[in-house]
Image (spheres, rainbow, N blue to C red):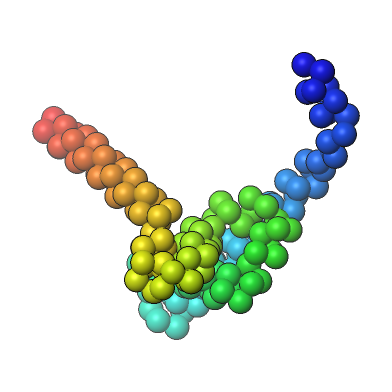
Length: 147
């Protein structure tokens, strides 16, 4: 107990409100960029609101991977904290960071084998969750249509 009290006295106080504001602003700015990309695709490539999501997400992930590869995204993440981790850009950063970290082990075992450590679980649970939601929706639409 004495150690915890001592630790509290020497631990620097975190500016919680300031960190929340920075995360909100940077995360919001990422969302504004995503909206601009969506609008661009809808205007120039005739996507609809229903079909523009996939290319927008792919573009955001690609931009994040480029920024991570050149070392800029880590600086942004250091400043914004969770503001860069919560949007889909955090996923892109996690995938490419694992690949960069293990590049010395070679392209197949290093980059290829480690790139999807995080992405694999995200994809697995995303697909499983989508299956469960679709199953529930199908059951409810069947029950609703049978009445």
